[in-house]
Image 1 (spheres, rainbow, N blue to C red):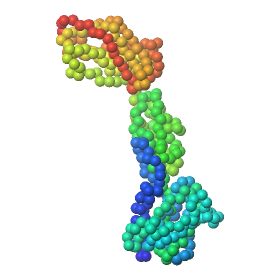
Image 2: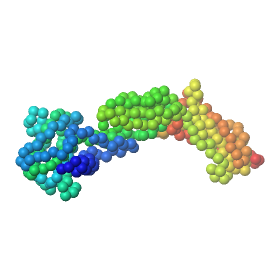
Image 3: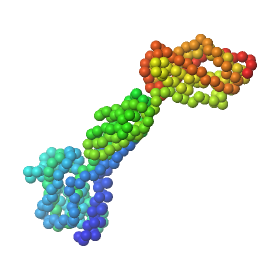
Image 4: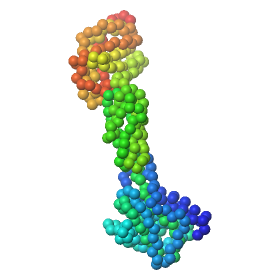
Length: 340
């Protein structure tokens, strides 16, 4: 076999390996958002064409570096039947798998008139091995033995956190060696992938896998403040008045300040809020705190809006909460005059 033909066949063997991995590996698909394709590690690869005499066992050695599935790929000049035997480091045939085993000519994939391919997978623990191939006919061949690291994925590529709160990241397909945060003043991460927001800003959390591959997640940390649109008159039905919370935050003493925009889409002037109740609940629906007022004077001209602030005292704040993801509801009545 001349060098040009060998180089062409070697390229084909690399391409064929992709198909082999798809067919032979049985890993379930992962459902995470970011994936890193499996990497290939060669345990043995022919550097030139090799020749084998019919009936004479041809051997080569290789070392498996990690337990798991090992892929065997063979390129030959003909579809010759053969017997394959795997030996351990002592020269004893490997047990626990079908060994030795015979391969008939119809097990090959035909690439061209003088190029045939065969592939198989072996479940081998790490260690040193010898592969022996006995062809039925004189055969020119090239062999490759390698491992394909599993496809890996991280549960999120972008994470938005509230300062003081945490969320866990996870990796599928391989074990994580270390978790690190690029900017620990913004967010920290523990050895189990739990990310905790510290201060508003941006950072990158990296999972370094035991095989050296890395997966990253961009983290944004925001202040523990509830925000929403203040709303406009055009957004509410004609003839209606609503009170809409647009900001909620804790002061240094633990009191919860809720800013409310009163939207008046009527031809009358609003002069007071009556029996108004402001309720804050966390994202699970649990009560965070509330306040009630029987009456608050306020002047909101016709077809306009005005803001006012309600304070839920610390003693009425039932639990700490991620305000950024909270729900704030305002309920009550409005008093109006006949004049704008």
